[in-house]
Image (cartoon, rainbow, N blue to C red; front, side, top):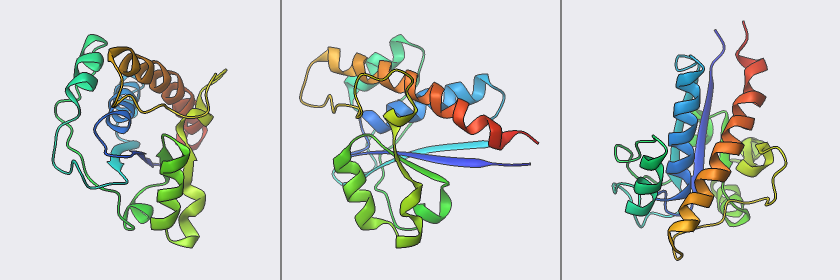
Length: 160
């Protein structure tokens, strides 16, 4: 049985990447693929390690049926490049930080989430941390579109 593992990465692992993780987990579950797709998230920084996602992310996600409260922030590590098939960044700064951590042989695992969004208007997921509630809703919109596209891109690998 083919398995695929994905780790979503943003700056602090309290807004964008846990949102993407929760969205992807729900999509994977709905598709009956929980035994084939492993999903996690991390941050490039260590400021929030051990903390739950931002309350605004939890509220926005909760309105759409996603439970972010169970997630805890962690920092990406070099060993994650061995553990995951894809390391999916939210923006270009995350990509740069990941390239500095990644072993040279694993840099091809780094992708931008919005690469998987059909008809995307933006190429990055904008950090909502310093903005209002609308930013968290926009992150959800982007994550829902891109995670659906990511799951569609992974499906051929998951067929026996």
